[in-house]
Image: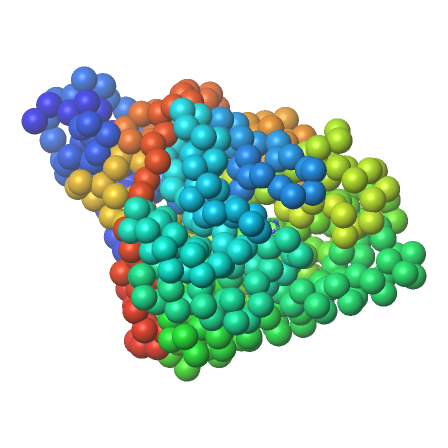
Amino acid sequence: MIFDTLLLNAEVATASDRYRADIGIRDGRIAAIGRDLGRADHTLDAAGRLVTPGGVDAHCHLDQPTSDGSKMADDFVTGTRSAACGGTTTIIPFACQFKGQSLQAAVDDYHRRSEGKAAIDYAFHLIVSDPTPGVLRDELPRLVAAGYTSFKVYMTYDDMKLDDRQILNLLAVARREGAMTMIHAENADCIGWLTEQLLDAGLGAPRYHAHARPMLVEREATHRAIALAELADVPILIVHVSGREAVDQIRTAQGLGLKVFGETCPQYLFLTGDDLGGEGFEGAKCICSPPPRDKANQEVIWRGLENGTFHVLSSDHAPFAYAGPDGKKAHGPDAPFSEVPNGIPGLETRMPLLMSHGVMDGRIDIHSFVALASTNAARLYGLFPRKGTIAVGSDADLVVWDMDRPRTIRNALLHHAVDYTPYEGIEVKAWPAMTLSRGEVVWRDGEYLGRAGHGQFLPCERPALAGTRGRGHRGPLWKPN
Ligand code: URP
Ligand code: ZN
Ligand code: ZN
């Protein structure tokens, strides 16, 4: 066979294996793995460097409409460019339903926003904020069958939150249709009550965001979400877990044999409540929910990555600029924390941070890295084995790692459209030397080579684990020992 591209001398690492091989690519897919594979139109030399599957960032927000007048800085052009430069080759952002809107309208709108703009492949999760009888009976089953096989449920945010009865109704649909439910677990009433007390006392600076969302509100909602899933007897995934109290809930549930999956994010490994600042507004840059905790909780999250509590490390990239009237200051430079758009950027830094401080600092092995950054998300959301692994027949989404050159994260070096990174000044020892998306080089030696429109929409399969019973033995997602 004559290949389009041969990637020579790769130190291939997947979630389960590590070996030296050449990779033959044809028509965007991996066509052969081995030695002396033959001829190719192009050759690339990995020179013995580590080659992993491209990252799957299963939780990010791009050009997502908001209800408070703010606007995200990244659209599908700049967001996917940034992802590619950091080694991510698949993203799953959210088609978000507003109350009163049909789910189909939200999906159609999100296709219009993404069409022809992405440099890497993408699928959609659904955000269900208005589970009317029509949504539950007609729209969701139709959309799941059409490849939108996961949906996010909010237990907080006034414009998005569902009550327990609504969540149960959705979980029942997830079970029947074979979809995966992601849950943002924070107790809305506790947050509302605490926020009122803080604002009445004149405590509106960004740092009080953390006081309005202490760990117990996350713990309570995580416990409740798990109980609802147990009642509906369906797997769930708790997103952006921030610290010990939620981790304890998830581990207890897993110990009981419940299929509860966990996601965490770099902000809970690298930021603390101190990053929310003093009395000034600068700390708004790190306002996200749940908020970053403290050093001890960072260690708990690292341990959860090591011991298999977490299955996915996502960025939760929610790109609101700091300066200007659209982002963090949408309600003014002195707005109370409760009016600051939630979320921080992180698409490009996710994989280098985990490779450097996870693998190279000896906290997780390379197989866990691949599982957490790529394979498990592909499995959980019905994209495996097309995405998330290096195997014959899989898309040629590959990262060649440069692990020889330490560098310092600077926003000026990143490729998103946000005017800051919360990780400014953090040292990393690894960065992609090259990223390939379906065989095309999109990032090489510090140069972005991607093209808006190369990225394709990916309908998702029903994940093998979702929609089955919520109890049962540990499935294949658990990291290999
Ligand atoms: O603060 C956050 N996490 N913003 C993004 C939206 C969400 O809840 O994931
Ligand atoms: Zn959330
Ligand atoms: Zn999010």
